[in-house]
Length: 96
Ligand SMILES: [Zn+2]
Image (cartoon, rainbow, N blue to C red; front, side):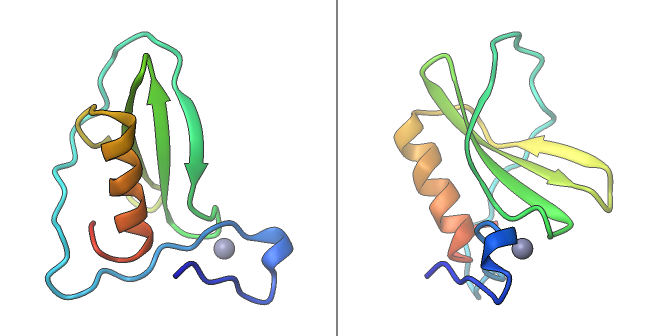
């Protein structure tokens, strides 16, 4: 489940480490579609890699920002339901 540490007031959700046999997601270069992206959930900013659940134009995807590598990648755009499931799996260490 989602864990909170001693600084819960300052931290968001932390994603678990990937578990053995986790789903390997395909990460793509960000698309240059022009619609406004709404971030509906994100993992804690204290980590080098932040995952965001994004909604845009009735679709959803997960965006991964790696601040160590300086890269931004996103999953394929899909239904908001599937994107939410993917985001939860990342939180639980079931997908990466
Ligand atoms: Zn944190």
